[in-house]
Image 1 (tube, rainbow, N blue to C red):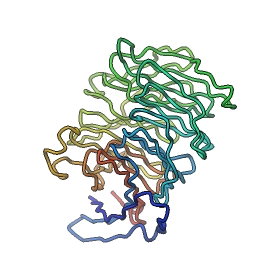
Image 2: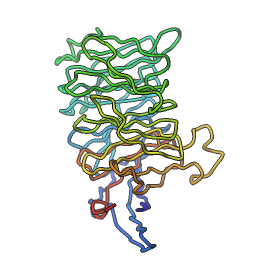
Image 3: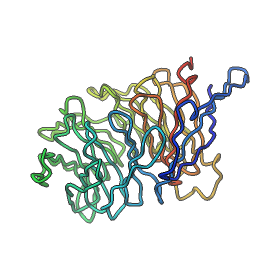
Image 4: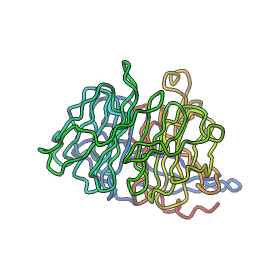
Length: 366
């Protein structure tokens, strides 16, 4: 097994920060302990949020990283050196999720303030605000960026919903009309994303069931099997780059890999902690899984007892490859850079940790 250890570079979003080159950001140290090797990576700690992280998203080119947190202000960073570019101010509640258009011009965010907002990525200008009767939990642009999925929580008698909004080319023409509204199941929908070719919507949440919906009619097409599927709340869902499969993480201490079209369970990765976040490598057959004990119990134990490291698994073999420590609280968000050469994690401790992989990571053999 490979163990990943960390040396830390702190970045507090300072405009005078001098970026490090990739060669300076990482180094490798191997110790022969039987078959065990230790790879030491030098993460960048990005301190721009005052409250726990909730979501991380790279743009398509992988040069920008967007972060959401409970402090109301989505933030954008340079994905190479961790320098902060700016924040998007306008929400009055925790921001649960975000997505960025394929051309990196627009950002959509969903918040506990019962709104989802559309932003100009470059200027930070709010272009439009979709308002609801309950918190907006999950957002996802369609391929082509002409539509966006927004889910809302059950609240004050209002059921959970999956709503599809049309995105106007000119912000002046934007409306709040829904192209499709699906009344969700009992409980909160934590994540809803587009399936292949925008023909389906895949949702998962508190009732532990994954559902596939027809994106035109709203008809329920498939549900995950209750026996082989998750047994507790599904906290996260990550689609593969080609949308052929997706990964889910659950409070039942497992992550599961599913076929996108048939909803067949492909693989299960068993953990010893609740899973809050998952991500699929776009380059190697690896997945990364993070979580930890519930936030309310964090102060009761030290970092090791809380099990706050990100765990890497071989996607096909299901074997654990190694882990990355560093957070002083549960990991709430994970994302791979689209080039597969770095990943980031966001924690209950309010930090984003940016990891550039050492060259030796890519030569790991099982």
